Image (cartoon, one colour):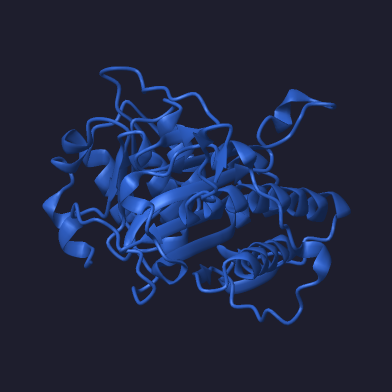
Length: 316
């Protein structure tokens, strides 16, 4: 189209950027649902496989909201959520059809401009850190939306519904972090952990002898035990921890997809304990059965110190 001698492209933003921009708004809506369920007082807790594997009303409502909202806009995308739910109960008030304009202004990396809807897989953890949510450890809680292409995590959105919650009455709650490989990650201040310090971040509620033996072998200066994979990756990119180490099968693809994309977008690395990359194609098994090792910097230092006995115990 030509106006006043200048040609203007009317091409809409690339599919990937539209998906990320929508996921951003969907995650903000999810955060509101999470806070509303908590303030209403009835968490509707259900045990799935045991006392450390819980589901709340917030998990259920958020997953319905995220999956239905994204499926309505991008019907050919595969969406895999943590909770086993039917989509019959989705009410219109759970649907979010907005998008983040700032994200649409970013140029899509060339290698992703030709992606088709049916080539994307979205991994959703509606409430990462459910156990902590039920115990009032609200800063551990995140909403995770990871976007994969060709089996790789290429974009992600992490919302912290209770970010800033200790700032007192009247403080603005929550923030949304997002990233795309080849563009970077936004919504936080990238900070490296103190040089020469080995601060290990690991599980709070899924510890074991193997987990602890692995951490001991790394000779840490300190160990931080918190809930939520999303929360742990945020601690890495904000310089509060040097390595996220979890020598156990418990983590799933929806726990790691969004955090991986954001970590990789700022030059970090996440693998299983053996150093294998995670695969996120729709046919893949959901469990990360060989654990997790993630760092913002100095990945090789930590990888080289994982004991052989730990690796033998964790089969990919």
